[in-house]
Length: 118
Image (cartoon, rainbow, N blue to C red; front, side, top):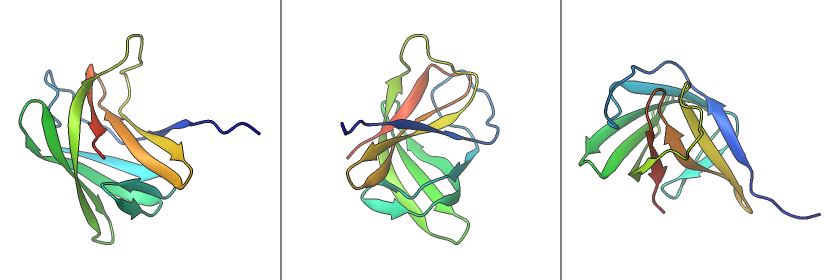
């Protein structure tokens, strides 16, 4: 059977719409699978994502679990592919040989999102 890389979209709670790429406020997400980001594996569950620092080209994003576990990861701002649906915020998971990793975050109403650096 041929291995493929799957993009899994995770539904998110509401997010305030803004005119810039900066993430204002917090983003609530429910990860359906364990997923890695910044070299740390996050168990499936509820998380809050916030932008700690935005320098216009990259951001430091904090991902916090309800149990207090927090991961800080560097992300670069990227332009959404043409014809992408920007009506909903979403987190894209990439399936790897070792499970899932958080690949990117797309914000509702914006043409720019965040892609995590390895």
